[in-house]
Length: 167
Image 1 (cartoon, rainbow, N blue to C red):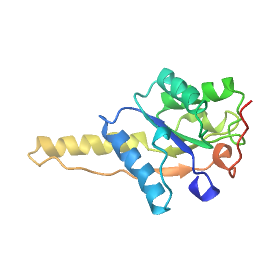
Image 2 (cartoon, rainbow, N blue to C red; image 1 turned 90 degrees about the vertical axis):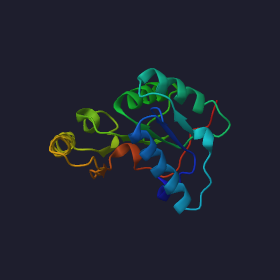
Image 3 (spheres, one colour; image 1 turned 60 degrees about the horizontal axis):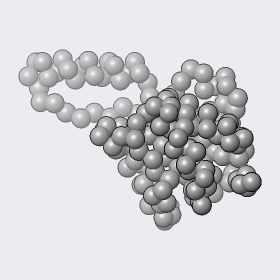
Image 4 (cartoon, rainbow, N blue to C red; image 1 turned 30 degrees about the horizontal axis):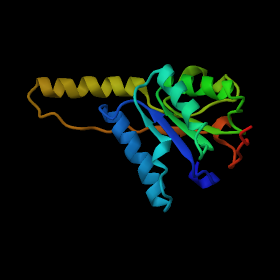
């Protein structure tokens, strides 16, 4: 998104008490830092992964002085809430606002516009979790492991910066 000219990128996700949220936030901040772009802290909305939280935060973001040109959502619930709010605001995902869901859902490639997402393989996560638990049960010390993700580019994030003016 930064490479497409976006600077006001909202990040809506769950609580910082959850490791995955902290890691996602670290990546968000790192991307801005590596590109020498100051972060608008108002664009970071941590709370919970529910549709209701994300919908409310999206409305608040789009009533602020610095309207986001792009949104990242962490979790399927957060994605649904943000989409609901954007549609209610008559904003078109992919042209008025770029959108990436940090999680994949089977419907993301069939809804319109198709949603760009970050894919985490649930089977691989399950296998690795079971393997680590078995190691611990056999006396090994707990250790951290990282499972790779990959980005799936679709219509929702293919645009360059373009904003719809507030009425």
